[in-house]
Image (cartoon, rainbow, N blue to C red; front, side, top):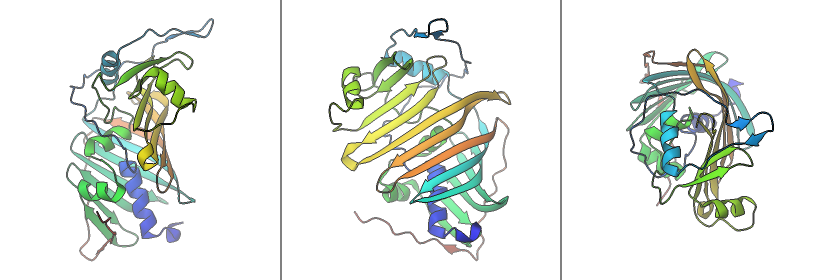
Length: 299
């Protein structure tokens, strides 16, 4: 399997896993995160399957989302990853060591061998490919230009675990929707009536649309969508298999569907999640390795 993985493919896979290719979110949140983790309660009537949701404002929903995010100082994640990119299916194991708001180390393993590592900080992204003996050094300006994106460290650390990455908290922009048909709360940049007409295909979407779907039992994000019709691209992250394991309540399956110039699907299945255990960050680029040459887009 290893011999068929060319450096361009490995770089794209590593980059896509580490930054989920391009989370297209642009509005920064500034509110303080509250340190609580509520477990599920029931919001539906089990006897007649009726959805019992009261209307909640965008401010209230945003507050609940923040209150119920996964709180941590350190995270260790071990995952099985499957990707479909340019018609090729790839499977590999990955380990993530993350210090919140500081540094992230992603190790890509093939056949239990460290094949590549990606080191991400607030200012830089570095990758070393041990099999091809090559490396990459860049920053978010380079990556954002390369992917035509608006990435930062916060986006990356939030999307991989299902926390609230980059959504607007401006009540004038973010609209609450009570989706009683599916028994979900939704935060959207479109008003309810227009959103329903877009979903039904009755009107054409002309401006960027973001939709965050929430589980009403615990206000966990179960889907985060961003659609940008002007660039003909979209990003959809779906979170499922929520469970308590090792005192951590989190989604153990993340399905990311990306449509752009080239489409990609990434499915992450976590087999282990540990929090608040300090991790050793080991990253070294041997002097004999050659730099990966990437053609930068021309403005």
